[in-house]
Length: 393
Image (cartoon, rainbow, N blue to C red):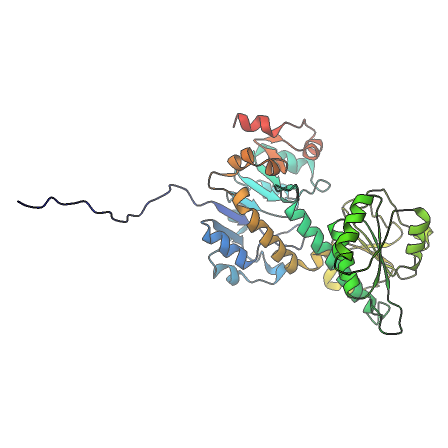
């Protein structure tokens, strides 16, 4: 009697049926933006997750990475139209009309908010192409934090203090002094108005360099948290509410003044009797009128290469993070990768929006409609609730 054959298990290749999602990274051509959102290592990790990464030729030159560094790790180097035509486009500046015309209809654009620099024509073109526009700096996580906005603010704070220290030490155009002084020499004074993450980063850097730091804010709870975080590391800081006489006294002796996001309107001008040659950094929204109207305004995104080639004193610097674009790129790349599963799940961005409230709050346009108040104001239309639109998608 012959034995009956017994079926054996055998490994077979299976297909998920999922098409590789393409992510395009065009070169930033707009003025006022030197940062790039992805390092070669970050691109490699996206490729390993099954994405097709399309980088415009020369796009990462601003952070001193050659195209070959990305190509070796699996990214494809393409021309601008192909990068802009990807399923998802990652582009930090406010996108121009001619570039919007090359976006994939119904595709996704991941960008920064840029409410003050978007034109009506650009917003309406985004709506016409039914682009899903998401502001990276508005995405919140489960703890109601803003991961992208927070890391950019931290870079701004640390960069501002590092640059200010360098400018003070310049023997020709600066004062030729060390921020922290030496034995027998009084250290410089730093006045920081605000107590957010940028203020804490700036204060920690200044204290580490040996400066005397004063922190001001009208939000006493935020101020208390900032002092606890700084003093918890044995880093002494002098803190106060924004009393007019106290802040005027601090400004009178400060060598460096940094304003982040104060919770009270403030305008600092020459009438407040600041020290001659003070160096100021405005880390608030740099698109609005300067908080230092009497000082020359220098945008580091446009002038950082020649910042030491001009009078460094009595100036107000903005866009501090753009002066260290490679650090910003590494920080952004790490943060974006931590959010990739939430932003770019296998089921697509529409499903991600359905199930992630933090992502929905960051949406600017969806299905040809404005779902953000600022975007609707620019376009001259009514804001629609994205939750309602998702029900009919």
